Image (cartoon, rainbow, N blue to C red; front, side):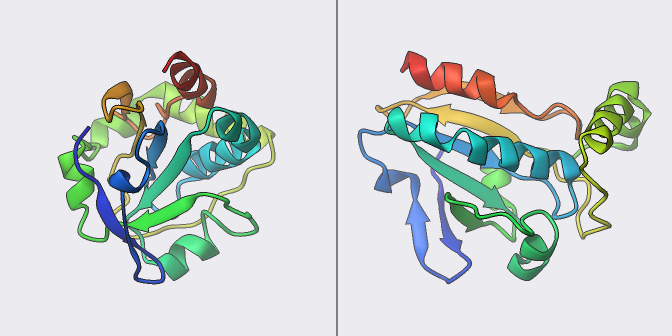
Length: 171
């Protein structure tokens, strides 16, 4: 797996290396206003017991200002995972995560995904800087190898948490 060493909101540095011999789920989040990313974080929180039984760690990576992130995507959530900040988006690039183009807005799957989230009670989170940064989801095994990779190509193709858990169970 590529290296990952970033600071948390309190300035303390953390790295993938602090999980020796443990699998790790890593989710690079989109902009602070990303409703799809918020729904993904909620599903990760709901799966925390299963993740814990597997002995895995979880790292969430965000590039937004911590206050903006907490007031939008993470509002009202008790996030039990390590949240690291990559304001320069260097780790995003190192992990192969790009930006989406205007063509991504033309995909009807995006609108269906947003519609289903609205029906489930999720609401718009407004706007945020750098709205075109894509996220991604990864599972790193006990030996530090990538065993699950989902680099988003549009804002609607976030990995299913169930798929990440299946990869976790296989390691």
